Image 1 (cartoon, rainbow, N blue to C red):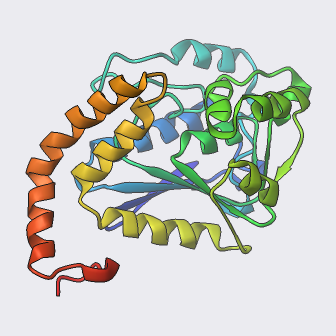
Image 2 (cartoon, one colour):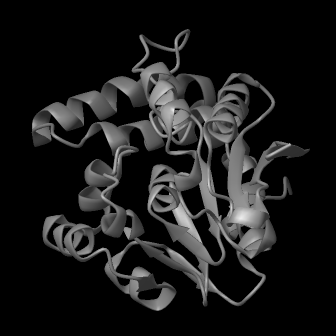
Image 3 (cartoon, rainbow, N blue to C red):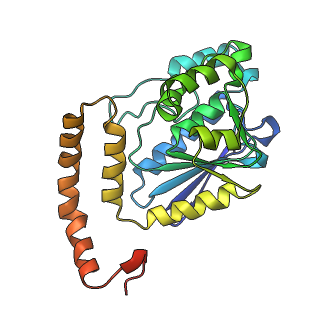
Length: 264
């Protein structure tokens, strides 16, 4: 299997497993990756996912060796869906999905071209110190069609995004951290265990509240301040009723003081 899925309680680990080609994604792999995240979204017991690549690399992007009639046919099969019952399918697989649940990218080695776009699709990125990103498809005339031109400027700003897109240069982990392209830089071999530990912590929070806040962070883009505030209030009030009142009662009774998760 070119994509494996493992469950660790409420955490789902999705692994790109084509190490012989630095986890480059061909149409069959893209389809499996898409199915893995559709299943994750639909699983009521799954709260957080971690995406990483086997063999020391995240992903080298779309497999250029598959750029043939098969790839052209694959592009025709991709689509923008019509809601939860018809999830959108991107060329790299899940890159058009708007999940309600968070996904963390654990990045080792290369996350370039479409692999960078996969990492940008995730909620945030943890990079090992030797990992790197870049629009490496620039040199081959292959455009960014998995959200790279949309997500990159939203993450690092318009000017920096233009420079990275135009030059196609390598961005090492420390620079990625400095410009906001990743959120953590860790030692070699630590991206995956760090991501899994953070995912487990996130999964312990009340999930309706977490997902509502995450949704509102995304939904405020392009809205006026007043419209964004109204949207936030609309989404938050039902969560206060379902989770907030219970949480306040637990706190009042003495649970979770000083940031603890315990019930004492």
